[in-house]
Image (cartoon, rainbow, N blue to C red; front, side, top):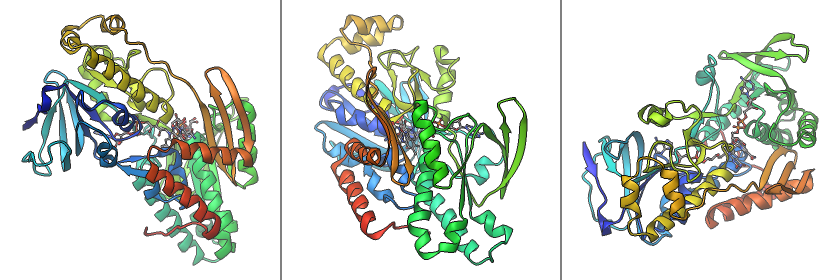
Length: 471
Ligand code: FAD
Ligand code: NAD
């Protein structure tokens, strides 16, 4: 297959896999005049995941929370190429990445350089340094039926699928008489996983029912029942207990039924089996018929990453992600970095972590570029690579935790805003909801997207949600 090597300006080639929090934050910060930067991702836009739970019901439009990769690239000076393609294999011995299903190639510094690739051709891109930021994928824990019948919420197409299913169930239920068990089933939504994705999604769906559906289908709206199923004794486990019990109260008051200590063990087309373990250890089993099932139980590594576990001896024991050292270098290599959800460093898989790791890595690349012998010396170094970075004055990554926020529905949110060990704000309620909105608007990575999200919020206050089955 064709091997692509970027030789422009005789600079090291940095190939970045992904277009999410890690990859795009790195693109924004790396000095592309010192490196040839090649981005590879099948998704040609960045997705602002914190507002994804707002999109299935149209609180915020899907297009408001995405930004094309090329918009970020065009803001940079230097040599940047973007391949809209999926990386299928990292070939450590050849220092290449195999890519497949290329649909667009944007070589911003060499727009006329035709690569002669057809859409389904496989090609290999040569790297001097690889940055893996491919994220992770929803974990079903092998529970039967989840993949076939559940809806995930990780990407934009998931949001569209949830909306379509939820709204077509409402339409079907509306044609059935009250008291029909099929009507009840269609109007039952089960959200599995009481982490922030599950809680925020349940809250947004309930908002749509209470604020919009109630106005034009009141009898259907009052029959919709959302169940939130969580295996642990609390929802939003990462927050302090005072906030989690406040969150549970808000959810119950908005009529979401919270099932704690309850794990879903099997999913069928129209019902699921859940087992509840009481404090005394007694287990009870229940069957919950559902119309819509949203599966939000966390993520697992992608196959491109688990394949790499096998190729690098020091990664053979890795399970949750590529084990990285304090410079974000994949242990057992001297040329592969990993950031974000596909890296395992003991930090939680959050946007906050991915963003900071990317900013840090851009600084590492800047420091590396200052020493003309750095690249040649690092390439020779197969052992004690950490020491080499230290000798070059490169400081380890230091994560600063700014806290956590979660939307609960009914214009209430919880927040725990910190800096290091100091807590500046801990609270829940309507005021926190506005704090949540301001902070999320500030976190958005592009001005266009920020403008669109704020406009969606203003529009919502006047015209309610745009929630159409086919759009
Ligand atoms: P991602 O952002 O997932 O990006 C991965 C990228 O890799 C994507 O562009 C994908 O298309 C690409 N890719 C996948 N496979 C390949 C391949 N084979 N080849 C090339 N490219 C590939 N975190 C917070 O801190 N705060 C929040 O409020 C928050 N809210 C969230 C809400 C939801 C609904 C979800 C799902 C997550 C949320 N998170 C939040 C977590 C956060 O989104 C992730 O931790 C973050 O996206 C990780 O960044 P990443 O770059 O590692 O992965
Ligand atoms: P998560 O891993 O945080 O939560 C998944 C939940 O599902 C866990 O509480 C787990 O106990 C439960 N679970 C697992 N299997 C189950 C089963 N069979 N039955 C019932 N419950 C089961 O996943 P998430 O909410 O998707 O979050 C993923 C990452 O993204 C986390 O790091 C999170 O912090 C981050 N995130 C943050 C925000 C925010 O800050 N507002 C929002 C969304 C996601």
